[in-house]
Length: 470
Ligand code: FHN
Image 1 (cartoon, rainbow, N blue to C red):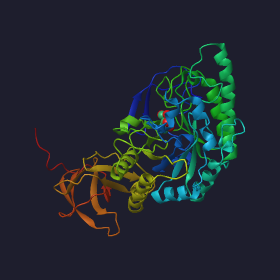
Image 2: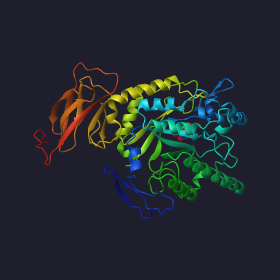
Image 3: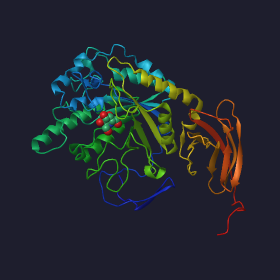
């Protein structure tokens, strides 16, 4: 536990932040990134998959023929939906076409390195046969444990599994969003024990789990539980060494989430980037982070009728590249239907991303931020393992010339396409630390492409032969 927190702290060289020094018992337990092997693996995934699957896939965004505009997995909270009717939907849950290996292979083909699977969403329905509730897959016509099937299938194809768990549980009798009196507190104590039992149960049943992805921790009731949540976290970490838990789990002594009262992140990585991306490296404060993204604007569970803007493959690839270029992981959501089938739109996107990844994954896996000035053509990434540098180009200039500005004492020595031909490109030096890479004049591309660049570092400043006198 940290008691002394420096007021000025440097993280990753590029962020200097002023922090306060409020004494906290349940604030951040560590400053800066976790450096162990498990976290290093997490940091280098680059691309992940999110799966939202539950009984909400049965209504699929419609109730009695009426279209629900919100996120499909929230339909129970809609005034048109009687809770009782929703809470008996599980009696019809029978995903006869579910085949965990089909999903795992699609994910593998897409280039995914880890998956986050909903074990229980806000509706409280458990996708594993929990011994602490009857509201689970065990009591559906399907009966079989889908979490076990998914963990096994994904692990078999080499994809790490993380379990999503919602603290909000609309079904449990003891659940409260706020604690207004002693009765509420008494009920909530039972809920806390239930939550703890389920989490321990999950990690014992699926010991290959690499981490827990918490959600629904914004309730006032949960924000009052700093001591309980802290000790629960400690217990869970003893069950799975190296377990990874993001910043959505623990509140601090004062009820702050994600960042404690001193501005220090609580958890192993920042979980605040949902359906949005940081603009620059300063926004991530030297922390690990993930971005979880939907394909339509805001649909996680299966909605049979997607409306509004549906993101294109190039848009999603750009989000992934941007995430990696700013030291984050990009996690794309899938919402399979009630028969256990991943919809065709998602299947197509997964296979097209996979096609791109097969050619360009070296600019994604094991890669992160490169401190070179960003240019309008796209993003730089660099390999944490080999230090190789990449330019991922999204905007092709009409001049077919890509500007590169190198840091002081760094000069650009060569550049080539990373495809099979490895065609070398002409480099024109404009002045010190400023270059144009010339693309073939007739070049056209409707997909982003990657250029590998090599640089050299000189010990002394090169002469500033073109510096103007002003
Ligand atoms: O309310 C949920 C939502 O349904 C979905 O699960 C997302 C995924 O990050 N999390 C919550 C909102 O933050």
